[in-house]
Amino acid sequence: MKQHHYEIQVAWTGNQGQGTKTYNSYKRDHAITAPGKPPLLASSDPAFRGDPARYNPEDLLVASLSACHMLWYLHLCAVNHIVVTEYRDDATGVMSENADGSGAFVEVTLHPHITIEADTDEAKALSLHKEAHRCCFIANSVNFPVRHVVHITRKSAVA
Image 1 (cartoon, one colour):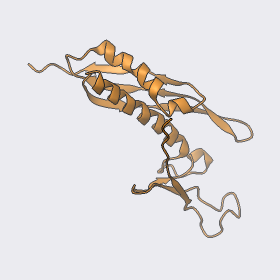
Image 2 (cartoon, rainbow, N blue to C red; image 1 turned 180 degrees about the vertical axis):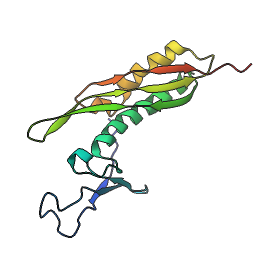
Image 3 (cartoon, rainbow, N blue to C red; image 1 turned 135 degrees about the vertical axis):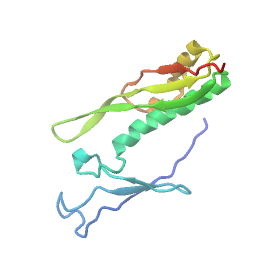
Image 4 (cartoon, one colour; image 1 turned 90 degrees about the horizontal axis):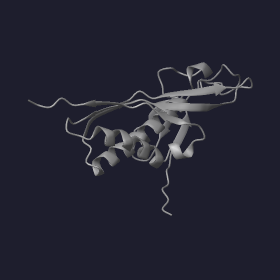
């Protein structure tokens, strides 16, 4: 079995001089870096005292599922001669929080909006989403359903 390894550094940048002396004395800000890549500024969800202008772990989980599905889908389209000219996903996630503050995602729904060439097989383009889901590394790693609501538009034929 082939293995792939990933190196990520997460560095807390929210010390305002008192560290974690109290629950309100620190920011949840942090930077996510990987070798050779620009930093990603992150925080916690605003519901948990985070900065709403930064990505949070929940955003990144939903984004990872969306990006993984998209990359597999585009690959499968290319090898199956399905010409996609645009792809956008309006992904949503639902996380349930328990009374003790713990929680878990209960579902993510991907809403890919895809434009295909006029002469492309729409049924095949639609069916490849199931295969992309089966192949997606991230979807295979989570314990909640990842649903798909696909919107396909045919590009107008050039007259």
